[in-house]
Structures are given as C-alpha cells and as structure tokens.
Amino acid sequence: MSVPAEWYLLVSALLFITGTVGVLIRRNVIVMFMCIELMLNAVNLTFVTFDRMMGGLAGQIAVFFVLVVAAAEVVVGLAIIVSIFRRRASTDADQVSLLKW
Amino acid sequence: MIDASVFLLAAALALGSGVAMVLVRNAVHAALFLVASQLALAVLFLIQGAFFIAALQIIVYAGAIMVLFVFVVMLLGVDKRESLIEPLRFQREIGVGLGVLLIVAALYLGVGTSFAVADLPDSAGPRSTEGNVEAVARELFTHWALPFEITSVLLIVAVVGTMVLAKRRLRS
Image 1 (tube, rainbow over the protein chains, first blue to last red):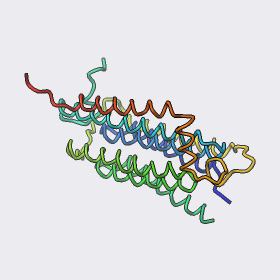
Image 2: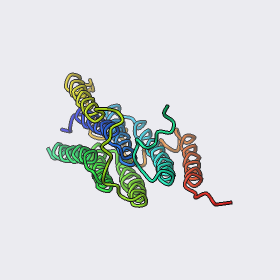
Image 3: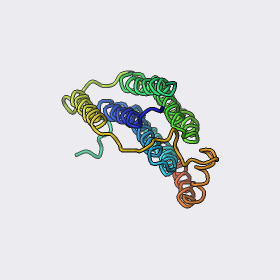
Image 4: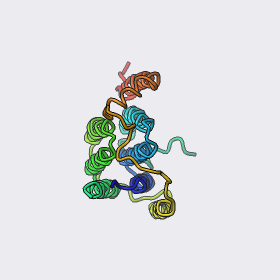
C-alpha cells in the first residue's frame, strides 16, 4: 500500500506557500531568489505526482525542462545581482528602486 | 508501512527546512537549509519511482545551482542585518497573513477533494520491463528531441549573457 497522491500534492502546496511567503517578507535579494527556487521545486513535485497518477512520462519530461530553465535562470539572475551589488554595494531589494516612479 | 514512514520523514524534513530557510537570518544558512529541503524532495521523487529525476535533482539542484548560490553569497559578503525600515507598512504582517490564508485554502482543497484514480501505481511511468531512466531517455530523445536541442541553445545564451553581465567594464 503506497502513500496517497493527495499527500504529495499537499506537501508540494505547502512548500510552494513557504516560498511565496519568503519572497514576500524577505529583503535580501539572494534569499528571495532561493525562495523562488523552492517554489520551482514544489512544482516539480506536483509534476512527478501527477505523472504517477496519469501513468505516463510527460510529467517527468516537464520536470527535466523545468530543471534546465531553472539552471539558466539562476545563472542570469545571480549575474544581475552581482552587477547590481557592484553599483550599489547592497543586496537589499528596497535599494533597487530605479524603475519605480 | 515503510513507504509511509519514509514519506513522512522526507516530507517533514522538506517542509521544516523550507520554513527554516525563510526564517533564518544568515544567507549561507538559508542556502544550506535549501539544500536539505532539496535532498528531501529527491527522496520524495525516489519513492515515487522517478529515479532519473531524483538523480537530476541532486546533481543539478543540490549540486550545481546551490554551489553557485553559496559562491555568490561568499563573493558579495554575508550581510546579516536586513534593514528594518519598511517602505511598505506592515509588509511582513500582510505577507504572513496571506501565507496563512493560502495554507487554509490548500488544506481545504487537499482534504475536500479526492482524485478518482482507479488503481494508483506504485511508481511513475509505464509498466514495462525497462527501467525509469531508459523510459525517460526514449521519450526524451524521440518525442521531445527538438525541445531538448532548443534547451542547449538556451543554455548557451544564458552562459554568454552571464559573461556579458558580470564582465568588469574596462576603462577605455
């Protein structure tokens, strides 16, 4: 007897919410970025769980592509953070308000 | 029985590490908690039969991406103090309140609905003699071959873009 799939979905939803709250309440840009990674991971768990329920492989292929895109996104995002830090000497999200009116 | 206990252990570890990552002050500690959460998620993938994804999760996420995070944190210096000046008033309280609301919604949906699946297989993927890795590889290199090639272009664009972004401007 295996664990019901709803439990996995619940864990994944709670992880996603944790990441959302982290993005909302943290100021450090790097930690906010880590919270986004946590949200991506939670969605990956949902993909694998639904994949098991449907009995196909499309979900796991989707997880593969999510991984690749996440890797590219992390590389570019961290480069942006580094170049912002060079200019402002800060990783605080509130300091980066040049595009706000 | 063993399945359920492994699930509970891994789920508790994933959720606990995730919450700790949000709450902890030090960015390096946050990165380490995120690694713990991702390893627990890899266990969850493993007991669902997605072996290839579990290996990728450990190699790509817990390995490559988190090393990059820790490297950047070290490069920029660990800043322990976050500013307490709030441009938006009550931002933290509203954020936590929204999170609680979302948790209530998730619990309501999770308890209230049940998916009508006749017989849930123990592991993902089609039932056959070949293993999960072979099945994923066959699917990836036949049906999804073109998107797979396009991801290589994406990775090259990301690498070149990063070099341009992070390059120090030479004084001319």
